[in-house]
Amino acid sequence: MSILKASVIISTYNQPDWLEKVLWGYEIQTEKNFEIVIADDGSGEFTKNLIQRFIQDSNLKITHVWQEDDGFQKTKILNKAILKTSSDYLIFTDGDCIPRNDFVETHLKLRKPNTFLSGGYFKLPQQISNAISKEDIEKQNCFHLNWLLEHGLKKTFKTNKLTASGRKAWFLNTFTPTKATFDGMNVSGWKQDVLNVNGFDERMQYGGEDREIGERLMNCGIKFRQIRYSAICVHLHHDRPYKNEEAINRNKAIRKETKTKKYKTTKFGITKHE
Image (cartoon, rainbow, N blue to C red; front, side):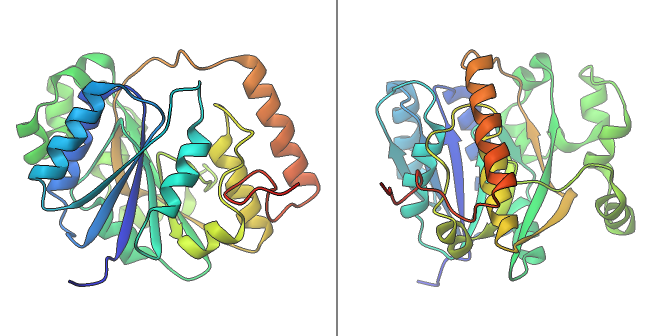
Protein backbone atom coordinates (compact mmCIF):
# COMPACT_ATOMS: atom_id res chain seq x y z
CA MET A 1 0.00 0.00 0.00
CA SER A 2 1.36 3.43 -0.99
CA ILE A 3 1.99 6.15 1.58
CA LEU A 4 -1.01 8.46 1.91
CA LYS A 5 -0.41 11.89 0.43
CA ALA A 6 -2.89 13.75 2.62
CA SER A 7 -5.23 13.47 5.58
CA VAL A 8 -8.51 15.37 5.26
CA ILE A 9 -9.87 16.32 8.70
CA ILE A 10 -13.62 16.99 8.58
CA SER A 11 -15.26 18.49 11.67
CA THR A 12 -18.94 17.74 12.24
CA TYR A 13 -21.74 17.92 14.80
CA ASN A 14 -25.24 16.47 14.23
CA GLN A 15 -25.54 17.35 10.54
CA PRO A 16 -25.76 13.89 8.92
CA ASP A 17 -27.62 15.13 5.82
CA TRP A 18 -24.93 17.69 5.09
CA LEU A 19 -22.07 15.33 6.02
CA GLU A 20 -23.41 12.73 3.58
CA LYS A 21 -23.21 15.24 0.73
CA VAL A 22 -19.69 16.19 1.77
CA LEU A 23 -18.55 12.56 1.81
CA TRP A 24 -20.04 12.04 -1.66
CA GLY A 25 -17.76 14.88 -2.76
CA TYR A 26 -14.69 13.07 -1.48
CA GLU A 27 -15.70 9.83 -3.20
CA ILE A 28 -15.19 11.47 -6.63
CA GLN A 29 -11.92 13.33 -6.05
CA THR A 30 -9.41 13.28 -8.92
CA GLU A 31 -6.71 12.48 -6.34
CA LYS A 32 -7.42 9.15 -4.65
CA ASN A 33 -4.43 8.69 -2.35
CA PHE A 34 -5.73 10.32 0.83
CA GLU A 35 -7.60 9.45 4.01
CA ILE A 36 -10.52 11.05 5.82
CA VAL A 37 -10.54 11.61 9.57
CA ILE A 38 -13.93 12.78 10.86
CA ALA A 39 -13.65 14.96 13.98
CA ASP A 40 -17.08 14.44 15.58
CA ASP A 41 -17.90 16.75 18.48
CA GLY A 42 -20.54 14.51 20.09
CA SER A 43 -23.04 13.73 17.30
CA GLY A 44 -25.81 11.18 17.84
CA GLU A 45 -26.70 7.84 16.28
CA PHE A 46 -27.78 9.15 12.87
CA THR A 47 -24.30 10.55 12.23
CA LYS A 48 -22.62 7.44 13.63
CA ASN A 49 -24.67 5.14 11.38
CA LEU A 50 -23.97 7.27 8.32
CA ILE A 51 -20.23 7.18 8.93
CA GLN A 52 -20.26 3.43 9.55
CA ARG A 53 -22.02 2.91 6.24
CA PHE A 54 -19.39 4.94 4.40
CA ILE A 55 -16.57 3.11 6.18
CA GLN A 56 -18.01 -0.20 4.94
CA ASP A 57 -18.77 0.88 1.38
CA SER A 58 -16.06 3.40 0.51
CA ASN A 59 -12.71 2.72 -1.12
CA LEU A 60 -11.29 5.53 1.00
CA LYS A 61 -9.75 5.06 4.42
CA ILE A 62 -12.18 6.73 6.85
CA THR A 63 -11.59 7.11 10.60
CA HIS A 64 -14.31 8.31 12.97
CA VAL A 65 -13.02 10.20 16.03
CA TRP A 66 -15.83 10.94 18.50
CA GLN A 67 -16.17 12.54 21.93
CA GLU A 68 -19.06 13.07 24.35
CA ASP A 69 -21.30 16.05 23.68
CA ASP A 70 -20.24 18.72 26.18
CA GLY A 71 -21.07 21.94 24.36
CA PHE A 72 -18.94 23.44 21.60
CA GLN A 73 -15.60 21.61 21.95
CA LYS A 74 -14.42 21.69 18.33
CA THR A 75 -10.81 22.52 19.22
CA LYS A 76 -10.57 19.49 21.50
CA ILE A 77 -11.90 17.02 18.91
CA LEU A 78 -9.68 18.51 16.21
CA ASN A 79 -6.61 17.87 18.36
CA LYS A 80 -7.73 14.27 18.85
CA ALA A 81 -8.26 13.90 15.10
CA ILE A 82 -4.81 15.30 14.29
CA LEU A 83 -3.23 12.53 16.37
CA LYS A 84 -5.19 9.92 14.37
CA THR A 85 -3.88 11.05 10.97
CA SER A 86 -1.45 8.89 8.99
CA SER A 87 0.07 11.34 6.50
CA ASP A 88 2.41 14.30 6.89
CA TYR A 89 0.06 16.75 5.14
CA LEU A 90 -3.25 17.90 6.62
CA ILE A 91 -6.30 19.46 4.96
CA PHE A 92 -8.86 20.97 7.37
CA THR A 93 -12.50 21.43 6.37
CA ASP A 94 -16.03 21.18 7.77
CA GLY A 95 -18.88 18.69 7.45
CA ASP A 96 -21.00 21.26 5.62
CA CYS A 97 -18.47 22.07 2.87
CA ILE A 98 -18.77 20.01 -0.34
CA PRO A 99 -15.37 19.86 -2.10
CA ARG A 100 -15.01 20.36 -5.83
CA ASN A 101 -13.62 17.22 -7.44
CA ASP A 102 -10.11 18.72 -7.74
CA PHE A 103 -10.06 19.93 -4.12
CA VAL A 104 -7.49 17.49 -2.70
CA GLU A 105 -5.42 17.49 -5.90
CA THR A 106 -5.19 21.30 -5.84
CA HIS A 107 -4.05 21.47 -2.22
CA LEU A 108 -1.38 18.85 -2.90
CA LYS A 109 -0.24 20.43 -6.15
CA LEU A 110 0.25 23.86 -4.56
CA ARG A 111 1.76 22.80 -1.22
CA LYS A 112 5.20 24.12 -0.31
CA PRO A 113 7.52 23.72 2.69
CA ASN A 114 7.02 26.20 5.53
CA THR A 115 3.68 27.30 4.05
CA PHE A 116 -0.03 26.97 4.75
CA LEU A 117 -2.61 27.24 1.97
CA SER A 118 -5.76 29.30 2.52
CA GLY A 119 -8.53 27.99 0.24
CA GLY A 120 -11.95 29.39 -0.64
CA TYR A 121 -15.59 28.56 -0.06
CA PHE A 122 -18.82 29.78 -1.60
CA LYS A 123 -21.84 30.07 0.70
CA LEU A 124 -25.12 28.69 -0.63
CA PRO A 125 -28.62 29.63 0.57
CA GLN A 126 -30.86 27.06 2.29
CA GLN A 127 -32.97 26.36 -0.79
CA ILE A 128 -30.01 25.39 -2.97
CA SER A 129 -28.31 23.50 -0.13
CA ASN A 130 -31.42 21.32 0.17
CA ALA A 131 -31.71 20.83 -3.60
CA ILE A 132 -28.22 19.36 -4.14
CA SER A 133 -28.44 15.62 -4.81
CA LYS A 134 -25.81 12.91 -5.09
CA GLU A 135 -26.11 13.14 -8.87
CA ASP A 136 -25.56 16.92 -8.73
CA ILE A 137 -22.34 16.32 -6.80
CA GLU A 138 -21.16 13.55 -9.13
CA LYS A 139 -21.85 15.74 -12.18
CA GLN A 140 -20.45 18.81 -10.33
CA ASN A 141 -23.66 20.75 -10.99
CA CYS A 142 -23.34 22.50 -7.63
CA PHE A 143 -20.13 24.14 -8.91
CA HIS A 144 -21.58 25.19 -12.28
CA LEU A 145 -22.79 28.77 -12.27
CA ASN A 146 -25.62 28.20 -14.75
CA TRP A 147 -27.10 25.40 -12.62
CA LEU A 148 -26.88 27.56 -9.50
CA LEU A 149 -28.48 30.54 -11.26
CA GLU A 150 -31.32 28.30 -12.43
CA HIS A 151 -31.90 27.34 -8.79
CA GLY A 152 -32.15 30.93 -7.61
CA LEU A 153 -28.58 32.07 -6.95
CA LYS A 154 -27.82 35.73 -7.66
CA LYS A 155 -24.66 36.48 -9.62
CA THR A 156 -22.10 38.60 -7.75
CA PHE A 157 -18.34 39.15 -7.79
CA LYS A 158 -18.01 36.21 -5.36
CA THR A 159 -19.23 33.79 -8.05
CA ASN A 160 -15.76 34.21 -9.59
CA LYS A 161 -14.68 31.57 -7.06
CA LEU A 162 -16.73 29.07 -9.05
CA THR A 163 -15.66 30.16 -12.55
CA ALA A 164 -12.04 31.37 -12.26
CA SER A 165 -9.25 29.17 -13.60
CA GLY A 166 -5.78 29.51 -15.08
CA ARG A 167 -4.43 33.07 -15.25
CA LYS A 168 -7.62 34.56 -13.88
CA ALA A 169 -7.48 32.37 -10.75
CA TRP A 170 -3.79 33.23 -10.29
CA PHE A 171 -4.53 36.96 -10.61
CA LEU A 172 -7.42 36.85 -8.12
CA ASN A 173 -5.44 34.71 -5.67
CA THR A 174 -2.51 37.15 -5.86
CA PHE A 175 -4.35 40.46 -5.74
CA THR A 176 -7.45 39.63 -3.72
CA PRO A 177 -8.10 42.15 -0.93
CA THR A 178 -8.84 39.33 1.52
CA LYS A 179 -5.92 38.34 3.71
CA ALA A 180 -4.86 34.68 3.75
CA THR A 181 -5.78 33.17 7.13
CA PHE A 182 -6.18 29.82 8.84
CA ASP A 183 -9.88 29.21 8.12
CA GLY A 184 -10.97 25.76 9.26
CA MET A 185 -13.41 25.40 6.35
CA ASN A 186 -10.62 25.19 3.78
CA VAL A 187 -6.96 25.28 4.81
CA SER A 188 -4.01 22.91 4.52
CA GLY A 189 -0.47 22.56 5.77
CA TRP A 190 2.17 20.29 7.21
CA LYS A 191 1.36 18.10 10.19
CA GLN A 192 4.70 18.76 11.84
CA ASP A 193 4.06 22.52 11.79
CA VAL A 194 0.71 21.96 13.54
CA LEU A 195 2.37 19.74 16.15
CA ASN A 196 5.14 22.30 16.68
CA VAL A 197 2.59 24.91 17.81
CA ASN A 198 0.79 22.24 19.93
CA GLY A 199 -2.40 22.17 17.86
CA PHE A 200 -5.56 24.09 18.71
CA ASP A 201 -6.01 26.01 21.96
CA GLU A 202 -8.73 24.00 23.75
CA ARG A 203 -9.88 26.97 25.83
CA MET A 204 -11.44 28.41 22.70
CA GLN A 205 -15.02 27.86 21.61
CA TYR A 206 -16.83 29.28 18.58
CA GLY A 207 -15.39 32.49 17.14
CA GLY A 208 -11.89 32.67 15.67
CA GLU A 209 -10.64 29.42 17.21
CA ASP A 210 -9.07 28.50 13.88
CA ARG A 211 -7.56 31.95 13.30
CA GLU A 212 -5.69 31.70 16.62
CA ILE A 213 -3.65 28.65 15.61
CA GLY A 214 -2.87 30.45 12.37
CA GLU A 215 -1.46 33.39 14.31
CA ARG A 216 0.85 31.07 16.26
CA LEU A 217 2.00 29.49 13.01
CA MET A 218 2.82 32.93 11.61
CA ASN A 219 4.72 33.74 14.82
CA CYS A 220 6.85 30.68 13.99
CA GLY A 221 7.63 32.06 10.54
CA ILE A 222 5.14 29.90 8.61
CA LYS A 223 3.85 31.69 5.52
CA PHE A 224 0.24 31.76 4.34
CA ARG A 225 -0.59 31.59 0.65
CA GLN A 226 -3.98 32.57 -0.77
CA ILE A 227 -5.59 29.95 -3.08
CA ARG A 228 -9.24 30.87 -2.53
CA TYR A 229 -9.93 30.88 -6.29
CA SER A 230 -8.21 27.52 -6.87
CA ALA A 231 -9.16 25.14 -4.03
CA ILE A 232 -12.94 25.46 -3.81
CA CYS A 233 -15.80 24.06 -1.74
CA VAL A 234 -19.44 25.10 -1.51
CA HIS A 235 -20.66 25.85 2.01
CA LEU A 236 -24.13 24.53 2.80
CA HIS A 237 -26.42 26.78 4.82
CA HIS A 238 -27.03 26.10 8.52
CA ASP A 239 -27.87 27.95 11.71
CA ARG A 240 -25.32 28.46 14.49
CA PRO A 241 -27.15 27.98 17.80
CA TYR A 242 -23.80 27.62 19.61
CA LYS A 243 -22.79 31.20 18.74
CA ASN A 244 -22.66 33.52 21.77
CA GLU A 245 -21.02 36.86 22.46
CA GLU A 246 -19.36 35.76 25.70
CA ALA A 247 -17.38 33.00 23.96
CA ILE A 248 -16.52 35.27 21.03
CA ASN A 249 -15.19 37.99 23.35
CA ARG A 250 -13.18 35.44 25.35
CA ASN A 251 -11.67 34.12 22.12
CA LYS A 252 -10.80 37.63 20.99
CA ALA A 253 -8.90 38.19 24.23
CA ILE A 254 -6.90 34.96 23.72
CA ARG A 255 -6.13 35.92 20.11
CA LYS A 256 -5.03 39.41 21.17
CA GLU A 257 -2.63 37.92 23.73
CA THR A 258 -1.25 35.49 21.12
CA LYS A 259 -0.59 38.43 18.78
CA THR A 260 0.87 40.89 21.25
CA LYS A 261 3.07 38.36 23.07
CA LYS A 262 3.91 36.53 19.82
CA TYR A 263 3.18 33.11 21.26
CA LYS A 264 4.51 30.24 19.15
CA THR A 265 2.73 27.51 21.08
CA THR A 266 -0.06 27.06 23.64
CA LYS A 267 -0.22 25.41 27.06
CA PHE A 268 -3.77 24.30 26.32
CA GLY A 269 -3.29 22.25 23.15
CA ILE A 270 -2.52 18.65 22.25
CA THR A 271 -0.03 18.41 25.09
CA LYS A 272 -1.19 20.03 28.32
CA HIS A 273 1.21 22.08 30.51
CA GLU A 274 0.88 23.42 34.01
